[in-house]
Image: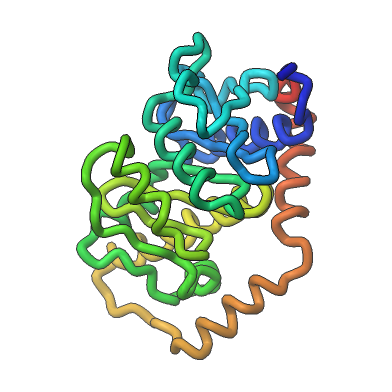
Length: 243
């Protein structure tokens, strides 16, 4: 297909890459974002191997098919773990339209703790109350059987905290996925900072945490307005992301 296909999807995903770099959520040329463009999720856009998050443009993103084993033979092929993990996710979780995987600092720190639960100590933490799946079965890089195993762990939740690894966020749009990634990292940062004081935590009740999580879900157009603001800033300062 021509690189002009799915242009708005490309622009949105490129925006997410640029902002992940700006916010320090990236890991140079490692980590990967994808966006399904077919109804069954099997055709999706993903970043090619070797591009730094801060330089990715809409036209750099490659369109691949989760069922095509020759993908890794193409000159602009994705990273091998990106192909395995995202291919498995889009095959097995067709409702997960946008999948963002990072090793962001605070989420990864939480993934290193023996107890990787995020307690409801403030509003951002409460947003994810009972909405995070935790993988405690890390078995090496996300290749082969490991990618298939990981792809089945979300269980309808937007966030998969990958023990000993990092974080994966899945949503119906780039805007929602990026908003979840951003606020989950903020929540983890607050929690890890609070833990560092060594003082007792003020943990909300399950009832209050559920109420607050529901209020977040009902907040009108929050993710879309957040992402629109990010696009506007890039349009002023790094408009080449759209190329």
